[in-house]
Length: 350
Ligand SMILES: Cc1cc2nc3c(=O)[nH]c(=O)nc-3n(C[C@H](O)[C@H](O)[C@H](O)COP(=O)(O)OP(=O)(O)OC[C@H]3O[C@@H](n4cnc5c(N)ncnc54)[C@H](O)[C@@H]3O)c2cc1C
Image (cartoon, rainbow, N blue to C red):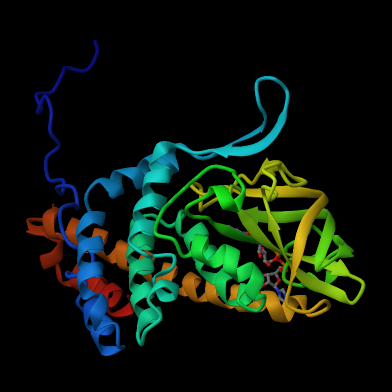
């Protein structure tokens, strides 16, 4: 009766690769390193080398932890006060802090010299290769700067915070912060790509200030300090800057209804929000909302391409590493002719 216990190793799996760690994501990616030099970002090699060396260490563990412990919405505190906050695992904060300190969100604005966009793109690519979710707030924060520059008095307050190399989480008034994040809220239930169908209304209260009332169906990184928001004003769809905390330190009228249960991007929070007479300031001209926010959208969509390329690179690294250490049918996989074809194709594609 029963199956006799078979002898085997008490611990340690046979024919499995060692962890892929302790290498430099930048210097060992020759096309990336050559591209940085070729496209005018050679002055950032040192920064990219230091970031690339760091990322294959502890941040790889943070990436796992941030995805295994997704964010949780806390609508109220224990006393019943509405707080509308999202709690993250400490690993999420470590990822954001590290990427922000290395300029993956803002090098292009902090060092506006030839090749600055290329240099920042490389840093962003390296961050995305390590963990994709946290690049959402990195990307939106980077992308918010160009449209804000259209309103110099707003840019004067916000650009130094958005471009800061200090990660300063927590909801406080801009004057109390050393660094800030920015998101964007366009999509509504009845209109995704077609934002002209937006219903959220903007009521002018004077001096370029408005009260926004309505909802947004997809608002990522809701713990950001401010959002560029589309809403219907008298002259049509317009773009507004909406801070989460008002200058006097009280919370703005933004309520987080629930978090999305997403297939991917799980470390990052995306939310459904309601706006209740939320205070906001006009960015760009009234009625020119799409033309204004498209500058931000455009930069985030470039980052979507970078993030996708980074995901392909991460997959190639995993696949080649695995094949270099795993044997099947008497040879390492990397020595099997058909496997070589597959890996070569992946390398060329990436
Ligand atoms: C992970 C994640 C995070 C997001 N974060 C944010 C955020 O922070 N802020 C925000 O505002 N939104 C956010 N979104 C929402 C995103 O902007 C919308 O999903 C997007 O605009 C598409 O809208 P929709 O999903 O309603 O699709 P729809 O607009 O309804 O489109 C449905 C399908 O039709 C196609 N389609 C649409 N128009 C056309 C056309 N003219 N011709 C041919 N095909 C067309 C689309 O490609 C799509 O396949 C997020 C979405 C995801 C998945």
